[in-house]
Length: 469
Image (cartoon, rainbow, N blue to C red; front, side, top):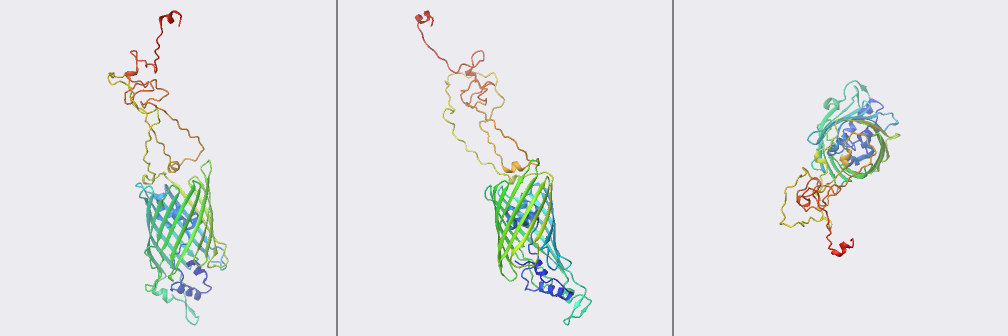
């Protein structure tokens, strides 16, 4: 798949006349793609390719799926420098710089802003300013959107080349009439759906309005709409797999499609640091094939990521050692999860008591019920539900440490609020007030002592008494 950088590099100037030829050709309908073609953003996101539409969980989601901004739990700043297609035979310098900031909002969403600039020496420059927002609607559904300002400019030499090859000073007629730059505005939309605890669906549509960024009002050079759909699978907390599909319309009304598969593996250390390796393989229309590999290391609140991208098929750019990307991220401030994003507890189903533990009253109704000497001010609950979610575990800035987890089980057979190991009257009828010993008034003698649980009465004769029995 051809991009603007490739188009310019293949026609790099040797003299001023050739430069003007490349500019005019870029503005003509013969160009395969318009400006602002996606060249990737951020080292981690680039290594995972289009699957970041479902895997994204940081400020880089602003460039892939703004709905995933809802996953950002802390303030964070990210910067990137990328050397695109390094080692080109004509020594062209294609570079991209990026700076972004994300701010979680108190009501549950995340606001993000970014600046991105691509340049080809002093011949061409693109700049994108983005403002986006993502928010959880429920604990499973998030939506987001972004607005973008797109600006691009051409470097124009102060010389004119006529049809005979004569060179003279001045501004070329085309640029004199239309200028050398243009600005347009665009919008993106995103959707995120947690299908299960392990599966996530991400959908985004970029440049919905397909803005026209041609220098001349009479020309039609749009930024084509891009559609992405991805599914992420969390095998366990430290292993993710994902797949994605991207479609995009070319200026020649051809729809290109790219399929991407990716994986990411992380390892946590006892001091809280984290190591990650990741990669993706993309295959698409017109023999497009791209391999991306990356790694990252997180040291406390600072994270450094690297990605290497190499085209293994499609339109060749000549001799190149691939694209190298470096990203630096800093997270700070309180960490939290919006209430909407937290898993809602399931309704607990009450199961019948086992045989022998039913609530049965055996006391005669005619017996009076004296006021007990002491009644506990509180009682133990009949049941307690413990629910620990991955979000509860992650919602801490403390370093991860190994620890044992123990749970004490308290049994209360007669449901009187006194544990069995402290209950001196374990068969108290249901609903009767008890004292601190777990005894009702009818279960105590005149001195306040618990009555025996079982009384055995046996009749014997006087003869047996006289014989010493």
